[in-house]
Length: 237
Image 1 (tube, one colour):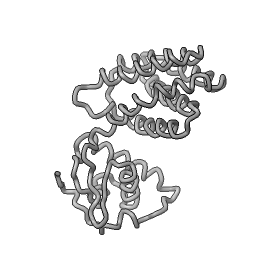
Image 2 (cartoon, rainbow, N blue to C red):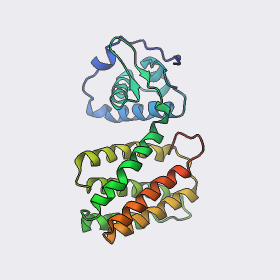
Image 3 (cartoon, rainbow, N blue to C red):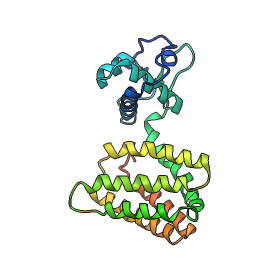
């Protein structure tokens, strides 16, 4: 276990007792704090066993302690950070692999979700996804990349919501909330993004034809290919 300069200055109950309700105007600051702390964890800047100090995190991220404390609460709830009674919050063992592990969970969940969703997706949703796909068509201009990300998010979450299984849907949507974080930080090449786009179109075509087995196989191939093309040793996928 590694302990770093983030040794906590708060009492053991601070994280659970401070600011129990997030004011509306600070919710985006909490999201920013959560994402930035998670990024430092997956990049190895806050390794497993690091004891987290709110004042140090506040100074480093340029945020007040309130959103930092609220972000730590969320990280504890998600299992990325741990805290036992009368002890300090620390980075969980293996948390640096969080985004990779999330992708592995998607491999288990999404092919099954597609099987359930193919005949449930409404014509209106399929039309909307088709429009997203057309808008995300690769070009030589950099503005197509955010559109490709939007298509990715809409496709996967629409499938999840049409699965007819609420726990399955919520689990996949939660995974995709972490996937959105990688949009901001990944350095995937244009070639890889174009490959992902082409695979998304194959999935969408199978959905439009109401072919569940084909759509499920295409989803499985898509998620596996993302693993194969991930940079060796990388923690972002």
